[in-house]
Amino acid sequence: MIHRILFYMLAGTLLFYACQGKGKRITREEALREANLTRVELEEKVFDLGDIRPGEVAGHTFRVKNTGEKDLFLLDIETSCGCTTTSYTRGPIKPGKQGTVEVKFDSSGRFGKQYKVVQVFVNTREKIFELTIKANIINP
Image (cartoon, rainbow, N blue to C red; front, side, top):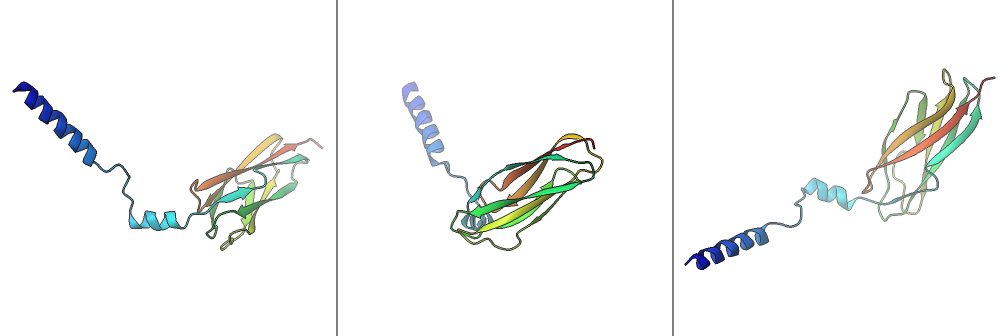
């Protein structure tokens, strides 16, 4: 009798766990978002501006290539500091085409080695990538 009870308990437990959904259920909005994801390729993620003088504004233009099959959108950009500004490609970047993210750094009030990070929000699985500019502010 005890073997029969244990058998049914074990079978019930196995059946219960076997019937549980293994995949995560996603909402319609998540499915649509997933369907519109693409891939991005960067020529470089870090650029060294080298030695610059206090008060000088220096910058670099990063190239962003859409290597996916859907349009790439640079959705938003956040900078790590008010001394860093950006301008970037608005609108869709078609598959196989390139867009840009221009980063400018104002060295006013800064000295020594500087590292500024820019976060770019995109429609890829990773959702975000970072760009970094480095500079060394030298005394005149």
